[in-house]
Image 1 (cartoon, rainbow, N blue to C red):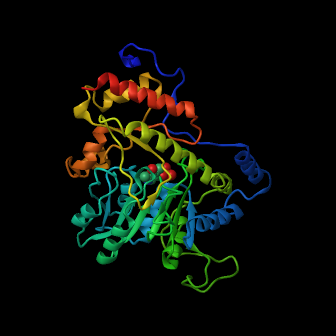
Image 2 (image 1 turned 180 degrees about the horizontal axis):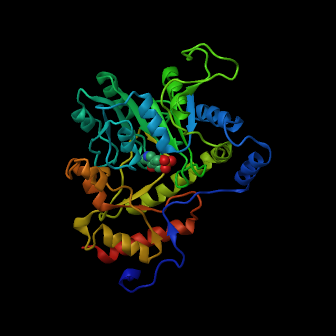
Length: 397
Ligand SMILES: *Cc1c(COP(=O)(O)O)cnc(C)c1O
């Protein structure tokens, strides 16, 4: 049997592979240069063009682009009317921003457990956490797989809640044939460099509601408006504008929008390649009883952002940390997405205790994210598979 590098053998490869990386080509560089040479740097035509493009891509009626995915969640929560004393239900297996957006509004994040096979928030667990104070649900399309939107929307309608879909992982994903972005009351995207499409930084909120759209515009830019029908006083002249609410500067530059537009031209390529890699990994790992492969729901046609390698600890002599380190020794550098949000010291100090969501906590102790991005070569993918199989074979019980 071949020895893993962690046990004194040779690594499967000499150069390090990381879990994610952006893909920037010459057309991206040209798109950005063009704005720098000729364009407005902010509040210009690329902002409008990107909003229009996101509507075309998703079928949403309105899009508001903003500085990042966290800002998108914040203005979505504000538009949903979240305030002091309100509750927002979300998953613990997410980036902290999905829950922090409630805290920004002086509201309380409440955590509902995941489905242990798909890893997405379980609508039944959401139902159990609803109280008189619940105002919204932030459902995260974890790894890119759409949440159970039909069940969640039905539940939100029944209880009078707004559904915010955190689609930071899932641009390009379809649910029952409809693109993510057109389905929930509000959908947020992130254009951070590890996400499928990047602007360096960037975010967006999509909605079909004209009312929510007006609010998003206000919160993105200081609560300031020039729209006649929103003004509370008589204009002093053509320069007149009013601040009618408290908003933020969450604007995005035209430079970033140009990059995101150029990246969106490659979305179907990105999507295709990510699907191919996921298929190869699945095919290789489905036959290993020491590994658990994330279950896919038929309703989701998924553009995968993350590939989760989950070990079955009872069948191995090493734990997740040992597996993670053994992969690193092979020069396959994974990451872990995510530490349950309420385990963080800040949340602990707010009074959250371990044990609230047992499925989420168990998943956390058994998983790591393998390399998954457009620029991976077939050889890279083979190296990852070889390394995983070598480690499984050596440490199986
Ligand atoms: C990346 C991410 C965010 C935050 O997006 P930023 O653009 O980094 O602010 C929010 N939610 C999830 C699930 C994410 O992965």
